[in-house]
Picture 1 (spheres, one colour):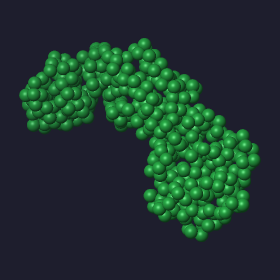
Picture 2 (picture 1 turned 90 degrees about the horizontal axis):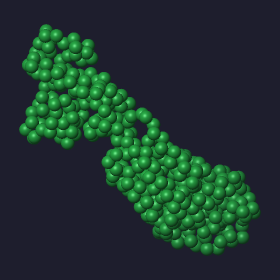
Picture 3 (picture 1 turned 90 degrees about the vertical axis):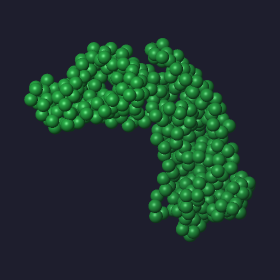
Amino acid sequence: MLESLSERLQNALKFITRQAYVSEKEVAEYLREIQRALIMGDVDVKLVSQLTEEIKKEFKEPREEHGLSLKDRVVYATYQGLIRILGGEKKELRILPHQLNIFVFMGIQGSGKTTSVGKVAYFLKKRNRRVGVISGDVFRPGAADQLRQLLEGTGIPLYVEPLGNSSVEVIKNGVKWAKGLDLEVVLVDTAGRHRSEESLMNEMKQIIDEVNPTAAILVIDAMIGQQARAQAEAFNKVAKVGYVIVTKLDGSAKGGGALSAVASVGAPIVFVGVGEGLEEFEEFDPVKFVSRLLGRPDLESIVARVQQMSKEERLRMQKIVQGKFTIEEFIQQLESVKKIGDLQALLSNLPGGRKLDKKELEEFMGKLKRWKAIVNSMNIEERNDVTMLNSSRVKRIARGSGTSEKDVRELIKQYTATKKAIRKMSKGALRKLPHLRF
């Protein structure tokens, strides 16, 4: 699906993530690659420009996202921007309870509308919905036969009338039929029409007025690219578009243009067709779609780090980087990097620190356990201000924690030295710490 666009976007990401240091020059080159990929994928230039500005802002903004590298932030801004272009979070076909839900399908001839009716019916049937289909296209003799073939063996009922009646009458009769069968959902196929064919568009308006559907579903061919916007806007004037289905996404180089153009008019894309068979049909999830486009196995972890870092954690990280942390926060940070690789990197950057062998690491882990017990034996005032720890307080804390006074003084010494050193550290030095990356 959209292999060419995906490959270009992935190449751009590889470029930025392989840089040892990211400056304005590297970001500019990265943005040129992203722009080239999207424009060649037929995405609207205005949308590409908006995404570019969002990524530039992420790079230039002086704020610090502790726990994230600048490269992570640039990648995440790209990811979020692409999701926005494609309509935001996943939307589903909303089926109201205790009533017949009527979904009228519309689109130009050849868009894959009739096939999409069959696919959606099959999709709902598999989810145990009582669903039926009305063949309301009285202009194309083969439409009813096509639906019969699609639904054969599925157990989905189909309403068809002999040629002669108007579409409006057939569909009105079909709705009565659906109510008689106590269906939850009925999908209405209509004649394909062009947005410039006034008589057919007027008929569509009559259908909408007579039936008062739960929602109108517009079917768009991915092959038309950015023209999807004009098509969606034209149909939206006749019947408010509630949902969109994009077909033939598997074989279109312009699929990105169709997806972004349709999403920009405000109607959510709920399904995409990726083949002719009933099974070759997917719910559209912008988040998963973008992840697949970018092809980053580590993208999920970057997103998780951004989304899961709570406000409290961000504030704690900020205090640590600024050298304003308490002795309790010092221990909490050491605990958060217990993983051997992270701990090695942290210890080697602490005052007097160096790379430790396995035995020394085990000894340090034991020391950390004692330090935690020492901090737990302090009262709130002592945790916030270790300068008040005189001999009698040290003795009390050692006794309460089951450690020695030497252990208590060693912790205070290490905490004080670390705090002082971090205040002097440049941002370049801090980048060496994987848990304090900028």
